[in-house]
Length: 210
Image 1 (cartoon, rainbow, N blue to C red):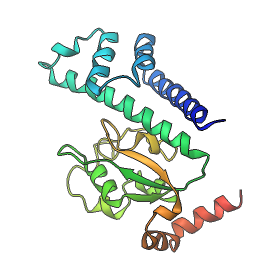
Image 2 (cartoon, rainbow, N blue to C red):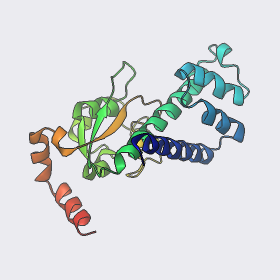
Image 3 (cartoon, helix red, strand yellow):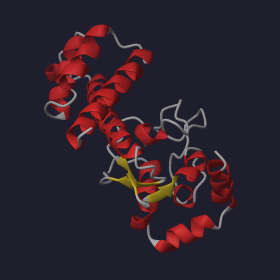
Image 4 (cartoon, one colour):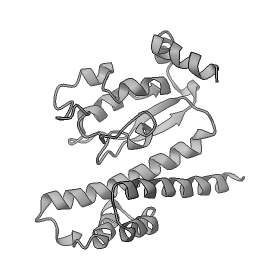
């Protein structure tokens, strides 16, 4: 396959995966068709307008209902960002990268988890089980609203797990992205520190015996 064909194939798979996620979340066929036709077109707000139409909501006049307006806009952002995250991970998956980088700008509304992850920046696949539990230094140093009443990291999807974290990222409305990177990009001190941990040694043993 040519690079262009690989990218197009990954885009098709990413859209298929996203639509399956939306079906599981209970969205109707009309909304799914809107997502399919508009995922790569326009801005968050333009996409939100089309999604709202499929739900019989007038998005342009919904600002008087702040919760509804924000819900539709966040839904638009989540769809576009999850699609891009899945697409990027599929493109890089053939390269067998095990290191990742958490990227994107922090806003005044960024939650503690995303603040912690942008500070951490580099992470290895073996760290994901602890990351999604909030068991890492940068997160522990955050002070406010770390967990919700269900003991899930604040803002994170309740069904986040080791498999879907790479595209769910920080959860609802998260604008950050996770990119797979080669080992050479990761600072040596970060690699050396991780490679000495039991966490990495167990992961390495399991994955080299496959």
